Length: 81
Image (cartoon, rainbow, N blue to C red; front, side, top):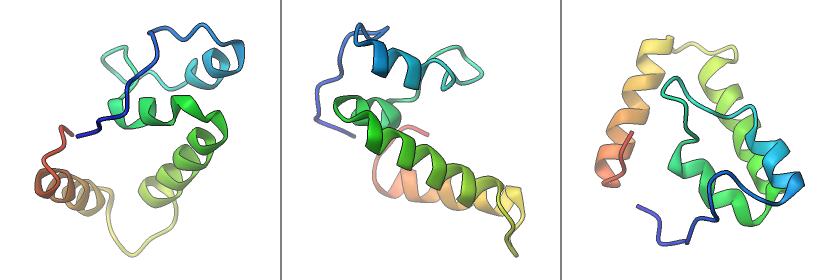
């Protein structure tokens, strides 16, 4: 759980709005973990690139195994996943 205040949704800052425009999930909103980066769009880009590399890049782990690890880590940190 984050204690960093989120900016308004949708963001009013043009750079931030552009950064968030492609990050809506299948439910139509941006995940909270990404909103933490709203105060620094450069870190948002790095987070998204890291996530995509870990979850979709070449790996000996299957997609299902990677998702399972993410769910367990989120549960251990009491984060909604």
